[in-house]
Amino acid sequence: MAEASAQIGPLQGAGLTLRLDETRQAAALRYFEAGGAFARAVHAATGVALPAVLGAVEAGAGELTLAWRSPRETLLLTPSAARLAQIEEQLAGAGEGCLVNLTGGVQVLRLTGDRIADLLRRLGGTACVPAAGEARRSRLADVPVLALCVRAGETLLVVDRGYAEHLLLWIRETLLDFPDP
Image (tube, rainbow, N blue to C red; front, side, top):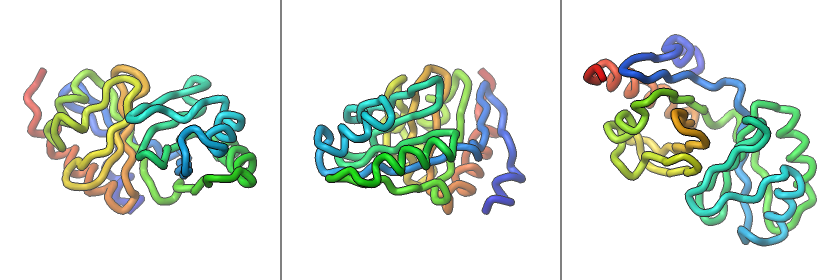
């Protein structure tokens, strides 16, 4: 899968650029209460509170991103394996929750440009388009994807690694069919 995805490389067209973010480390923070002991431990370890429903927050100029996935789960993204290991160690003894390292299981795709919403609407509909500060779970190209936006003009798509090539191919074909801006 990695070889096939690497062959696709950056995709550009119709005012959009899509790149694989191979450096991004990912973890699921799973907990019983969004305001409980584990949430307090996450805040102590990261300096960032768990995001509100459908929320996405970034800290330290991209050092850490937290995105709501469900009432009992938040996605943590960081470009640093050392930072993820540090957080994992700090949360190891925390009660009422756990950190599950997803780095090998998910692929992060970075979309930039001014027509992100147009592309996401074509691939999945209006409900999958996050505004700045939002994370939305939906189906794009008929696979489950978390789309999150922490700043205007950039959206991260988090997809199970097994579906990444499928999604990349759909995006490529959709961009080929996009009318010029």
